Image (cartoon, rainbow, N blue to C red):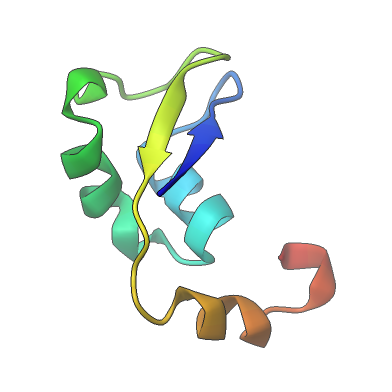
Length: 68
């Protein structure tokens, strides 16, 4: 499992997109980081746990280089 450190203004769906290349895993991120479930817009510096999900490497490979 890896981590992601938030930037000011990050939201669950944008974090999911940055990490996995899709917004579809925002719920999974919330589940793994239930201490921060009350956050809607994150401040900078919060370290979130990022679970592995099957198929994300294939999704990232499909993205153009500037979006990986």
